[in-house]
Length: 362
Image (cartoon, rainbow, N blue to C red; front, side):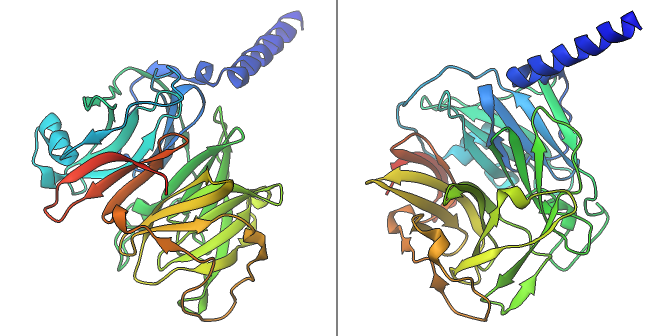
């Protein structure tokens, strides 16, 4: 009995240490990514990586913890060609899947596929204002992972491709939890999960439904493409964007295992478009949303009074939260906050060359 009590106390102490110091929950070893997609930073330089093929989210200790309130502006011309040279391949054989700025160091992290087929090799790269690119070594890195249940079958095929590749479409870290958007294998396939970090076992997540005004119907199988967290009337919400482009809010408190939740569609921003990234920032005494898109440019929207927009419940054209298109950011492929005054943007030019640059938040 005495030994059992000692064991219980030790386990509790270890758990408390892990919660107080998230990096303590990570163990050195090979992080065996099968794919590298969505990225998000958590505390203490910990990078979360979505692995749709492997059906898991990894937490990687980058060791990148030097705090900088601001850093020199980034301007790396032809970064796709530099990445290809580093990885020993051609520029048309790499894909930049996502980008995240470490809020502590302001260093930039990219999830990259070397190759474009099922055998593409996942790579995590890091760069800074100096322009030096380096690979984040995964052979012996402190890490942990959480495996996600009820994911689409890797062998399943649809007209749009493999649903498994959309098992994880976006990630965010907020209030000690990793929020994961993507698809499940359930009838209501669109899914939002909220997983505690340090990682515990992931649950089934929350099935989410929306009314898509442009399509004039309810949808349960379209995944959230990009999202951010935002407080509306002092309550945490998910602000999510879907293909073709409804903007929808969900209460974070509704993300419970097995729940089915109806989102509130507060805007239709134009069809034949895929939202890519979304950030929230402060400027001129107000809160603003910046979202880049596949075919409708970078949109700037006010984040004020989002609760005042009437829920869209009938077929409609563009309506709801108004937006302004930022013409100077044409070709934005990736977008993230850099510091209080600037965004980091991966811009694609007409020749196919990609430039990584910091720009003033509009």
